[in-house]
Length: 407
Image (cartoon, rainbow, N blue to C red; front, side, top):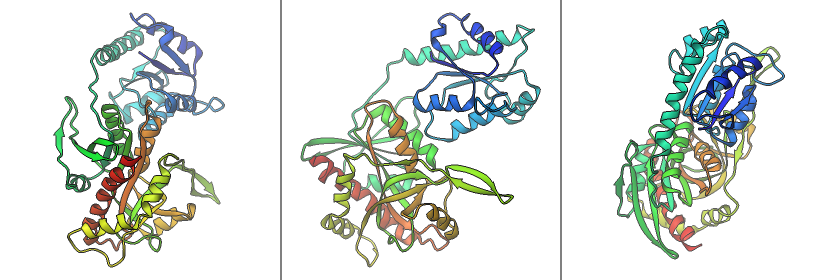
């Protein structure tokens, strides 16, 4: 079991390490120690741990003083972003009264907060009891054989109606529910130029980057697909796309990533987005498909309902992902101000791309195919939504059969 201690007090760190190594099966080789939140975040971007023993009175950086809410702020940060490995168990420990008060108000019993008192042995007994529980849970998972299934292409969505559009594709879908997992996966086989390929489709429990990242991670772990794609609908930038057009996000970025700075006495948001690109082995195929007029015309013609007067187009361009549904043109203009090449805004793609980027090898080639259902402003018109859902789902199928299947 891998344990991370985040603690800036050397004497307290020694005492915690000594208590942990009194537990059968735990040695110093199992323990990594860091002294500040930034160093811990750096580690959790690259690798996972099974247990964190966290000081609540913690500095953000090694050159800064500790703050009473440093540990709480650290946990909020890693739990809200998809680019961190979030540990299964966290035990918070502090002797600082302000930190203990903040933790009691914020999380109560959730993390198992322990009051540290070097003159008492009570904290040692509490710590060892909770770590033994985490150790037992870890051993039960390690000893359980992990189920894996074949899946060449995984298609994920954020909404049930987006999944329904995938399931309406002319394939023979069958449902699969893993033991202990509430997600329903749908599996089908298609014939391609290089032989049969196995598709799997699923939808997240809710909208947003976090839910998309969790579903993507579970799907990757269960199916180990070669390709991972997000389908569905998106908001588009007016005068750059038409309603119903297809957007393939490249790059994808989190438009809400950054910090607030005080400028002329007022808080001003300074974005600092991390951009994720489609793999260079896959991008040329997507660009080629985006210019395939016969393919796009066939998708448009196959929709049985009312469709836009213009031809269907596909754009391989920048799409921003954020934590909120946008219906304010001024807000979209603000996002566009920081990225002049922005073509769309939505809530999930960056989470899926990040999950594919940091998962264990072999990693899938990830991309997205969403169709424009509105312009992210108050003039939303749901009449175009069925057409957009159809365009997204059918482009995915045709790209798999005509391009991936022919590679």
